[in-house]
Length: 400
Ligand code: FEO
Image (tube, rainbow, N blue to C red; front, side):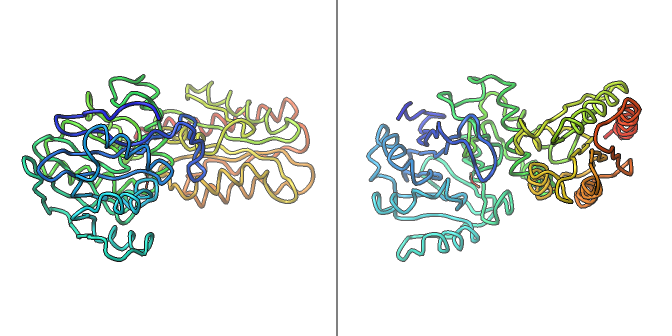
């Protein structure tokens, strides 16, 4: 175990866990690991907000023990039932015997379905309910489907501290606990990756929630998510990024995502990328031999253009491309333009399938699709550059 309990505000401590070795989160590559954040408030009612993954229970109890005897916890707030935040709950309840556990109505149901408990002192709280801990009050805001039906925010009113569950988080293991202590570019990249891979399907709800928070007039001066660092210096930065991502705001950028067998589709991809560049569009050419699906969708987060390339294999597309499309479809990006291309030997079905996938993702196709038999000639590469020009025109025409 490394690192102490950290006082994030007077009387409020981070007592979570650092999962340095985590490299996969449901298919999302977590190259920097993650943290499971839990917050201990020492007040008349000693209260723990959220817990950690079961594997890290001892680590959390050790950190709590640096502040108080864990047996003094009388209140637990469960903002979200997913096991990375509730996995240690059973052991914790057995250890500390809290007087009360608070959860949203959907979270109470989810906790029952996860733990099949009897005798836990679970009380339901809804949006607008308030809880007095002694010197401070907590108000609750249900954030349904951000990203589970049970998700909830807890706002410590006197402290201006929003404990935001999964929202505004990042899978980012570090010994530092605050936004101003880590490299800003890496932090925003990881926060964007987290949004693209987890929250993007719920973007309309994100916009609704931001508006709701504005209308409530909450005086937030710190945001503490359940993963990654705490937004102490600039909580406005992550709120503003969520407003952009929620609105599916993109820039004049296209990604060319491809897989290749004998370098023909690869050469086509490079020519398409060249065509985009010639028209002034920022490009990322992404060979699926090296790019992970979760990094592809991260690049798509601010990219207006999506161009797909695959050769035909056994009447289909290459399996890495099928993997990426299965994943990306569920994340429901909107407002993109795109096209497809690929080499083939005889059947040539892949481009048709890629077109179908673009249609299913509601990407506006600006080209019928470009196929080249076997190995592209110079004239074929010219056609690829022209396809790049066509996509670039659509990317530049959309000024959202
Ligand atoms: Fe980090 Fe939805 O759990």
